[in-house]
Length: 350
Image 1 (cartoon, rainbow, N blue to C red):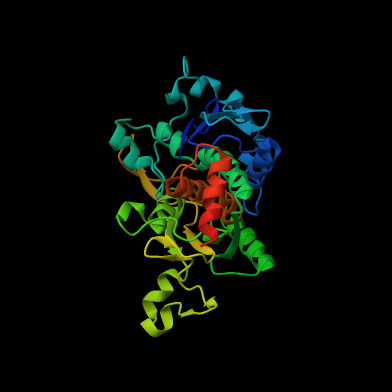
Image 2: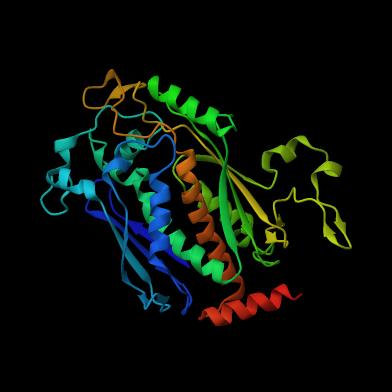
């Protein structure tokens, strides 16, 4: 299974194509729209969210609310496109009308213009590198979550901390202070997968390891700079006698491994963490170079967020759902939901 997305931040809209779903899964479009709304909320979000009201328009792959096994194609309209038509129209837009030359540290701007030959305009880079694209992944991931729930597997996330602060009220105060200072904040999110049968993934090849698949999908999320499985980096500071989950006749009493041993699910909850850097667009702009002149400058500022950690929970849930369903289909196969469910149930009985 795979998800492909297309679309620019201020273009007509975003497109997703989700290929490889089994036939017969029940999909509630309003649940997808609810997840899209979750992405737009969260303390510290920017002005763009006041413009967009994201809703999914399914083009193919569903009938009567059930999957057909053919690719599910969908569209999410960018309401802000009406303000950007002269710049972003695919047929007669002029992207140089909204040049971005004072490239932003921490963004794709400088490397992107050099890689793709965009001269002194980072606008084409920004438009695709923007986290606006994650709306398409949330929609695809929301569909996958509904399939997983039919199979008895759930994916849930939560904020662990914002800039080291774990109290919600104190987090909001810190975000307010950062906004007043023209700054931004990062943090950490935890995602838990429950109901995963044992033996999903494999140790026989490195690219079939379940933890590698999760790390790939999580690291593909904008702003994520590190990923943990179970206790993650903390295990590096522990002795072997402290780090591993001992096995007893009634099962494991701890879950330091985060539900994955040697690239395979071991029947425990799968626990994943993702650390997000502060958003690199600062209202109190950082120093940079204006690529049109070569002179020292302060970075361009676009309408942006102060902190995306809370909003990132649903995005990370979505990419983990995509990875989880991909792994289940790779392990058990099945052209229909009935086939996939029966094979998973057989494994669970072992």
